[in-house]
Image (cartoon, rainbow, N blue to C red; front, top):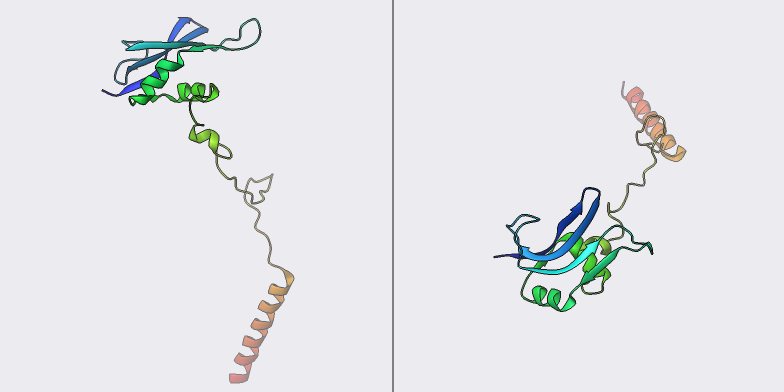
Length: 138
């Protein structure tokens, strides 16, 4: 049985309230659970802060016996200082490195830089040499 530490939704429509629970991974989100570990209220209170209460001793126990936190719970435990940062927070930014090639704003296509004048002159000189060889042989 794989145990996950995850959020179970309570509250009314448009007023969510979550409980942090240890549950079997096969049970539904709001279904049977093994233990309630805390709560999380994402709506800001009168002081403008989100409310969160977690029993850290029990969370440490469940993590020590192999329970896997869900992504939202993993972020919460990171903010509380219980876990190292999740992999996405350790990255530079979410999408990875961006393409820095210039784009034409009108067409949306990549702008291809033109060859420098030195390379075009050398191409012309090679063509002239080929033409000279052709005329000399005939």
